[in-house]
Length: 131
Image (tube, rainbow, N blue to C red; front, top):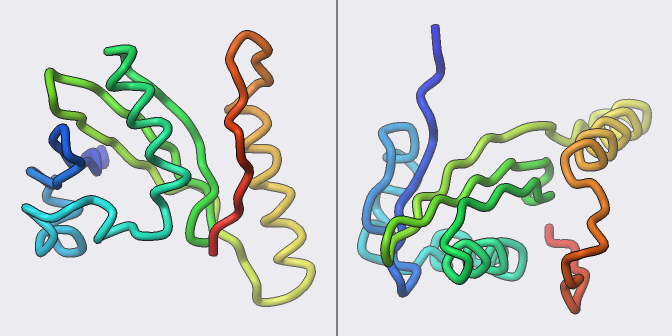
């Protein structure tokens, strides 16, 4: 059985205007509200990808570490709106030191494979880890 995509749509002011059925339970009550009310700690990590898609007018893909795991983002611009597709990948397993170490290695491999070093793009001016 094929999994249906998880996505949400935001307008030019980052207001949530549509959510997929898979997000309805968690994001549905935030329709008409700022994305940053729903994801207050993610703004520093996610906003640069949204802005890049808006300014370039092209699809942007990235993998970020957020809320204890890696999340693949795909941002697709359509006029003033952005459709953001998300796929949850690796989760941190903190049951034991061994499972934590293995999940960190797995996340490291996933991020390394997904985001090759690109010297032709300017680096972000900050690094920040979020809980």
